[in-house]
Length: 402
Image (cartoon, rainbow, N blue to C red):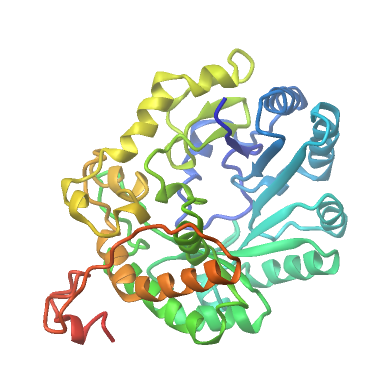
């Protein structure tokens, strides 16, 4: 059996916040007002997953909505079942993505004891974070998040910061990066905000490909100055993981989307967080097995669709670093996987600007660790006066060569 991880939504889309750009909140309107995973479903989930062959490494991701709405007793049950059904010597990892506003002393103490890794959403300093991230009552949340983070620190809970790059933050790469650094946050994940309306047009809070590319270039330029060995940026780590070891550790870089399963509160199973749809329902934990889901024609078709990219991608020098990009950014605007990703221009800008330096860092890592493998990836030689490969229309010397 091919190893896989789980992304579990025990409270479905339910959340104590109403962030304007949230792509999942619509699921709440389709179901219960307060959906909660039962102990029965939780036990079936953990027992069945831990009976599969994952080479003794079992990965649980708890997400939402807001998973801390489940309360401490739910996560105590999680650990109880993991201990009960885990095979001898099993390594179990629990990750939890949270808005950070409901963290209590007791909860943080528990997460610290059982080595949960938390991802806390924080979009920047107060005036940027609070623009979209508000409570149901439309009050700001920055101070609540910072309070939660202080509690996590007190109990030695490991956490990283999740930054959603939207139309209000996309021109603030340096400011956001330096803010996170000044707060002592050294593990960052930057996520592009691209959401489409019912007419397949980007919402006002979405960003363009060019904006994403500019943001990443500015971010890289700040990081490379003096923080290469101090601050972890997930995207940069993933690029180096590929250049050094030839491995992909983020799904959008891979050429197939059969990477993990999403489990909703009621036991329904889906292929991807961005594609929790009726037509992509793989089955339910009460009636199906993981082997059934892995062999599902719907799952396999969805996975293969990743490689059904736009013909432009066939001649792209950076194809091994995105394989057409996440399907969300292709299908979202047109319902066709062969549509060019709306972020394509940005990725080309970014790689044209940074890949030579990433290759230099990768070589340094291989030398330091005595790694003999070499991942061939060609970097096009571009003349100073040639058009910049980022597609800006400018000469290379006046654009990404700088």
